[in-house]
Length: 257
Image (cartoon, rainbow, N blue to C red; front, top):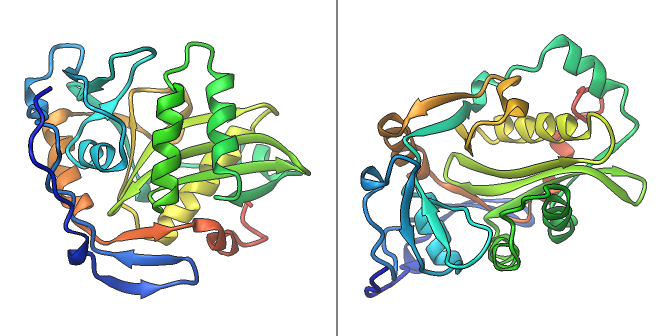
């Protein structure tokens, strides 16, 4: 992939609202040091480009332009499939059976307390993993910058379920979920949905189809529609920082707590 000049204009990031460790910022990711092709020229399988790196600026540019990394060994492969599996946050459906299942769970929900551990367990749980060491480093860097977040389901000191992803504007790019104990990943997702609804996110991008998210209402949409929605939603202010303090928005009487 051809390199080109790169500049991130951080001076244009304007802080609008403050929590203790979270701020609502206008973040514009308009330039990249690599010359990514337009998503529309990806092949039938969605493969768009080969190469580049997994530095935070590269990954943020890719995510906000409808592109994501997905590979198991070098070189890095970048995809923009013809259909995208998405779930509008306002349309998350938690059925009666799932509510009963998660209400019985004796676990605690934590946010952004053990991000690296959550990513590592996701990598270990999925046998044919795409979460390489370089990908772990890339996500860790995004977490340090306040863009990547984890939901951790704890049984005492043991993490028994979890999910992580990247948040930009009103978009949440879900990367992976896992469960070691039954229904723990359902609790992770419903907790994530509650957080995203409270923060007025618009869309969860699961990238590729999964049965786990289909039960919550996710569906495939054409790339053209996805890119239109993406451009609108990433152009909104971003909740940047460590989301740990958002644990308090999961009330004790909520079934996803």
